[in-house]
Image (cartoon, rainbow over all chains, first blue to last red; front, side):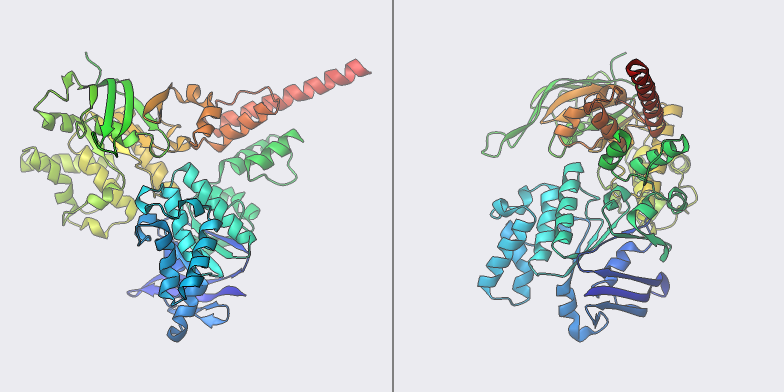
Length: 269
Length: 296
């Protein structure tokens, strides 16, 4: 079970936006995609559930090509998309109605919808807010309602396109820990961002630049490669940046730490 | 000379006399002097946006006084001149762009203030240079620009009015790292070289703290901290408690400190963190040597 992207190219009004992209995300895997503005990240997100069809190459979701319009609904149910601005994705005024909107459109019977809404709101930690007005929620809570709306359709994969860029630090933490928990439960995650410190728990990272894959590797490979990141205008997160400088001054690390916790342990060892 | 902006015991209540009423500001005392680079930090709902809207009279205090360059906002009829003095850039200012050409967008405010077309052209050209957007043809539609460029045009349209104080609400939101750094550097340049007073509102301490010389922390409608970044970072525990993002290196040194390492944690950048850690490791090494000597 996987989303397979094979030699994907996409052009918009004749201009190439993505060129020859190949990667794969399995269920239960966390793939990070990073790149500066204009690198094609959001276009790629929309190719993963068939909002855009490839100009060349293929995107195959659990064996189904996203270009197959007759299977469009299955693909959209399998791959859920969460966007940047929570205000643009919420449709109902009450939390539980918003979460029910997706499954209602899929024609699922009401009793099952109720179960799904319960399940989804529990997953994102908002079950006690089910009757609240969406307009009274914080940004982080709204983004979690958007994620719940996707979860209620029981997708196997969730693609999040800069889901935290409009949130404050607490909202960011809420969204990120929800995503990590979903990964543990077997959902395949594609997490798009230019805040690299959010990708420290990714299984793999793909760096996009000018519509092409610039480099890919494990989180530790990518997040400690200062030269590559600098070349495409991204910032190495503070902890690996610090570690690389300490290493030059003869402080030894078995592996370059990525998080505060790893760094504390390495230094107190 | 009076302070550029002074707030005396300012209280602000939304929806007064209704069940939805609440106090967004609770007794704010604040003086902002010419040439300062200030960052106002606070979690969502702490009153940041309410506070800055008092600086140019968009909101008037329910109680207390706001004085801009010697003029009390609640009493003056001339808010127009105050709004020229206090330039305000809101969140996602690019969404407010509406003109057909970049030139018209940048000239809009100036035309409202009655400048001649010659003066306007001069000011427009100057401001595009200042913000590093003079490579874009002025007759181009602003809607054909990238997000970062549109953000700059929107900021330039306020700067063109030559405000004395420039207030920006989350100016870096949604920009990529390169765009953030460039914009911050340009604003910093305006502050240092053109002595423009700058106030940046943010919920993130890490980035702006490298440039601001004063940080004001707002929480639940009151100012809970006001000082230099170094003074503010002494209170990491409180900052973390109210869910403000602190730089990871500050969090790291604070964690080491809590675990018994004898190190300061109110540092401002990675190079300082490197020095602090190296020094601490050396002192540890010495202590280990001493211990070996005393036990042998």
